[in-house]
Image (cartoon, rainbow, N blue to C red):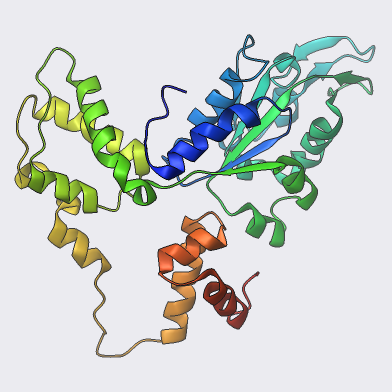
Length: 308
């Protein structure tokens, strides 16, 4: 778990719970915005589990082939049940399978994946014989899976089977206490043989107040870019990307009433939907993003007939 960096309460709690979750065989569903480190958590869960001697099998559901997805996942056999092609799930015997971007799993294959989760059964194309596989399932998504279930894009039975143990990854906006630590770590990592980039108090303030929509991945890329362009330099505001400057960041959040007016109810509805999307459907986190209580959020969701 050395790759998971942070001293904020959210990260400390996460690091404390990972060994307990890893010790079980329960399915895990990791929620989080892009760049929050969902794959690192999956790797840590595998590394702390009794399956650590086997290689973690990662399946990016968004990159699965449109044609032949069943063969790619499960495999193919002849009429006698002899395996001609061992799919990725069948080859994962004794290990952990990580379904990344599980919301992109095609609806056409979700029933077979559910059967695999429930009974460890792989029915290979070309044969009626069932092959049993012993694996542990970890999945991750940046989407609102509950909303996907409501709209019929994701099976409810598969959703609940995956979400035995949910893990919600905090955003970098929620862990601002970790920003300095991460900046120091990645600046040293990318400096190599060069001198380390230095951050003045002014630059630190810019970076601490920036929203970091790409989360830790964006911060890591930023440190790499600064190390390449300004080795050993004490950064000044002109060195920062424009969107990281305070006046630009402030302008992104300012709202000027247009001369034609607005539909206030529509604005409120849009903000609630955006907050729920950013919080991956977690009502408490969405309420914090909006600066209101959870009860107030639930009341306003009911007001707009949103799923409570």
